[in-house]
Image (cartoon, rainbow, N blue to C red; front, side, top):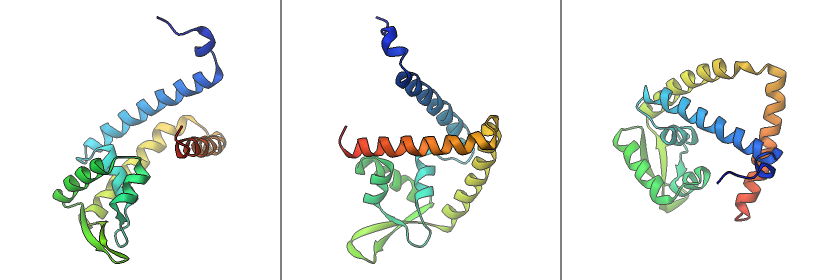
Length: 154
């Protein structure tokens, strides 16, 4: 059964579909690039959330990435086995652990970041700088609205 034209013709639905399509392309782009470094998109996001000295608690990483704690624990186990991160006792809460980057993790994160930034600049250059500024403003506004909706349980 096809969706009614009223639904698919709405501006909100068209925006939604475009954002989904863009997400799919960005995800494919990330998977292709990150595969060269032996990382998944989720692993790269963990690397981006960690400070080499301060690190983050597992709970904080889970909350930031909107992932179940069991998923984060498995992911951290894999990354620790690859020597990209290490667990340390949280100095502020001895019951908790922090995850910090190892030197290997710091170096890999920088190499991946450089390659990722270069590729993004190339692929997103279809938008001129003025349009990019406007798009950033709109995307930040949309993210804020969506984050508030998620926080409300919607």
